Amino acid sequence: MVQHNPIHSTSFAALADATRRGVLEQLTRADASITDLADRFDMTLTGMKKHVGVLEQAGLVVTEKIGRVRTCRIGPSRLEAEMAWIAKYREVWDARFDALDHVVDQLKRTEKKRQRRNKRSP
Amino acid sequence: MVQHNPIHSTSFAALADATRRGVLEQLTRADASITDLADRFDMTLTGMKKHVGVLEQAGLVVTEKIGRVRTCRIGPSRLEAEMAWIAKYREVWDARFDALDHVVDQLKRTEKKRQRRNKRSP
Image 1 (cartoon, one colour):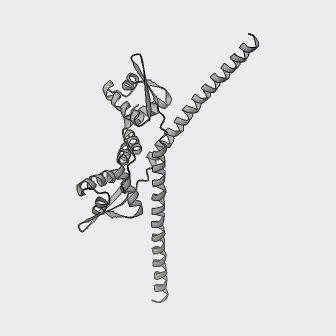
Image 2 (cartoon, chains in turn brown, green):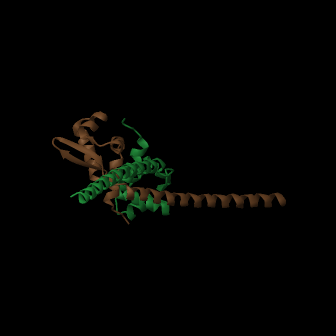
Image 3 (cartoon, each protein chain N blue to C red):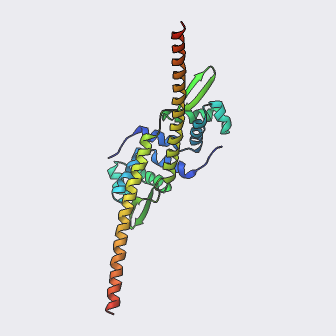
């Protein structure tokens, strides 16, 4: 029953931080060095390196070291599997609540019928 | 620049675990007690309580204690904001790579023209 999908877990964990989401948004606009990102997000170089490492592990960022500068750009992951998981969850969520609505409607209709019957034969 | 959206972070963190995603999938099929879930996922009661707590905080699960049994059902969150964030990211990701494709196409075309010119005037 337990499902192990390391891709899902790593990507969702990478997205579970506002700074990391901010870094991704920033990199969709332009590539940036780790120093640029640390400055922009008001963070130590060590802190930003850790965040970039988490994003890199999830395939959301790729880095390349040229000389002494490590440049970050958006990685190959389009969050395909993660999007699909959420979409599927929403689909079954909707179906379940639609079913619940149907039950509530049925109960209301039965109750109305009962009330009408009671009115006719007091 | 740094964006703080606690809803995103909490939900993505809740989804960053295979057991928690499994619990959500299970609850879309039927409500379950924490004991049922612990059995099904071969986990201690304490471990499962922690997982359910994380899901509850994200609005993905609601629990209700009747007598000594705590029943879990899927919560109000349809992962609306999280879905929107990923969809937006994919949109800009595509746009960025389309732009890159365009640059590569341009370079290829220029190179072909150059080769053709070279053939004509050897």
